[in-house]
Length: 423
Ligand SMILES: [Zn+2]
Image (cartoon, rainbow, N blue to C red; front, side, top):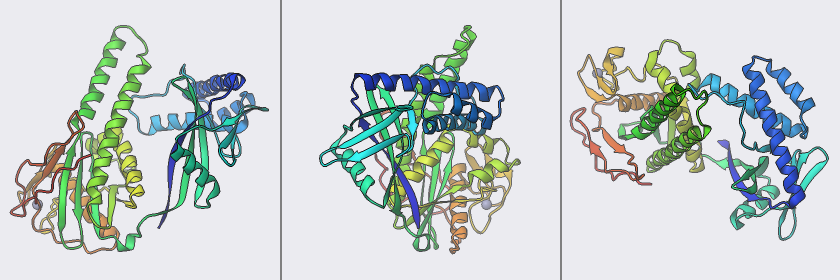
């Protein structure tokens, strides 16, 4: 199976004074294009009209204008699709990066001992120079320019900490991801606002399961939410963007750590595949009630999934998805499989038929893994007993406590004391 993998390399531009002036002017113009796009989109203007007007009106090369408008409209789209409060601002006052495609808005030239760049900041006004960066990043870029297996993609020129940088995306087009045919282990992933549950099944049995808690993300979001409300009540019509960015960075950082833990846990198995619930099916279904809705709109859901997917892909582990129907309501024991909303009460799963108790999200993760096996045309094991629920909790320091058994579930089959996942 082939799948594209993209990574971003960071370089310093070190332009001379006139180059700096050109770039600064272009950043301001890109910001104006961004703000204007958002303002008009909020105003209800047609998006194709916005595109057309700005392309003819902006003082940037066309390719850059198109990409900046595109990014602004994506921000609006994300807001409408997923986000509960974070409407993009049309009065952003920080410098906005210049985006462009390779060999359109920017170009690179290999020389014996360096890589030279040319960025079209303004029409007919390129900024030129030599890229600076770590030897490693320079080597990767050099390789990407020359090799057929790599594609050089869009880049963003920006000013960060008073330095001029160029962030270049390179994509590996033939990354080696395992064929699904010889996968041995399916790991079902159930993502929630404050935890992610994992269950590893192969054709004969469940092998292990774990719940990774991250309550601090929910707590932190709540804290910021309260802070914002208080500020608004004090008569400040718009809260400080800095708070928002602080929150975003915190959540982003935490989710990176959690996703790394997830991928480490998955990687202990031989030839695993990760299975998520299908986002599209979740969005299309209207009868899943508030739980599904809350999860879908919670920030961790989308991001964590994205982070897990690409980190796993870098390890050669593929991801798949299944229809999420009833995964949270069905009893995962094969001899029972009683399905009713009454089985679940928040984090507690208690089967109304067989009386089995479980962590509700762990139970869901097992059901997701079972569906994953079925989707891959594998034998789904007849689950008679389930291992105890093990919990890992992220601590503020970033370390993880030893796994603890929270409560007994099915008979026998004790957790085998696998050590905690560490970072
Ligand atoms: Zn049951």
